[in-house]
Image (tube, rainbow, N blue to C red):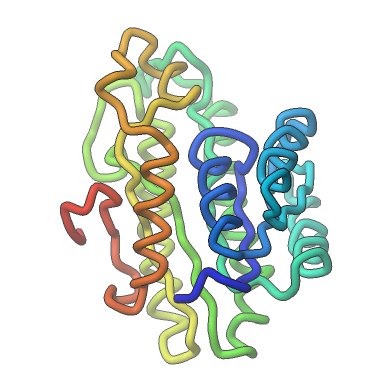
Length: 241
């Protein structure tokens, strides 16, 4: 899929992988709209993208807030045009230090699901109809190896990512023939604040740079037609699951 001249919405866009994707896609000529909760961090990222001439817009909002979803979709389309590529990147681990599932409060699991699963569900509902009418679109869910491997302490996050993967597969089946493609992309372990919160003793030298992962995801987007809709793709280049 062409990135140049595409209208791209990226949730969780103020830092980490979202920030790196915003920069990478704007460099390739996309009109980028970043969604993030923290306005100050968002403004810094927007300045970073705009300084070399990239087109970037920002919306300070929480994708876990039901009332924010349709305003987010409407504002993004107004700012950058009808959405061509939706990147569902915003995520939360829940409380840290990470805890066993049996020690997780129901309300904490609920919050993780609101951000990592229900918010993406609502955003797809808000934008996919317009994509189908235009006969094109790409929806990317940012996944994790915790979606397919059971790690003690990662229960809430792993549950949410496994459900996100399967939701993408179901949407792929239901939108088959409309021109919309759905992919889950596992970015691998990255040197981000989220990873540091989860594993503070990890050596950053062993982790991928978000900027490098963003470049690989852009390459996946450019070659999205090579993948069956609903696929789970490894950004490391190992293959498709």
